[in-house]
Length: 210
Image (cartoon, rainbow, N blue to C red; front, side, top):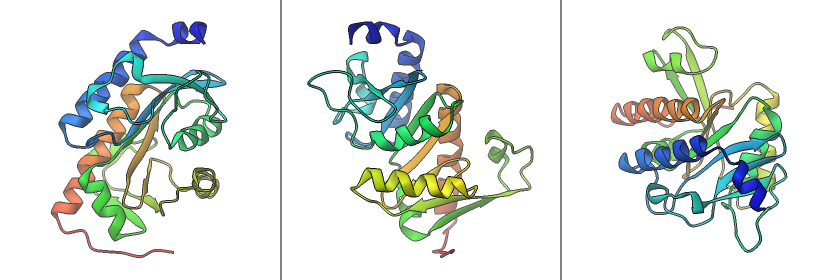
């Protein structure tokens, strides 16, 4: 595994560490919450180890796994939600970074509704394929499930029908977003978290959708 460690792009390692510090400073990854990863190559990615503090990350807090979720480093355990990262890397060859936050706003909204509707925000234009604020998107909320293989299957099925294009929430848990680069994934997290905060401040009401 030493060779794989040396193949981890130092710039991506630094950008992941910086994302953790930024997100922690904003209260989006309290304690050991959250998990981050970036693609190493077609078959492998690097992900934060289980139980590490995302505001205090170092290179030692990353470990390699394959796209099936198997650890490639003995004696270490990756994030409990590794399979959700695997689902995204397998489905989208263009995705090179996945970020997961546990902000108060995303947690509150995910407990109130089954889809979070966002419209009229200038920041929507940061999301892929959107060129105007005059549009509505839905961020789906999936029920939390300790069976991560089953949960990743539910996410995949939603994506098969065109859902979860820009990110998704896990109920009472937090936000997943991704991008072609670490910067793009971070920008999407920042934009969505900002809009979630606005919705909570405005008193977003519970809305059930089929």
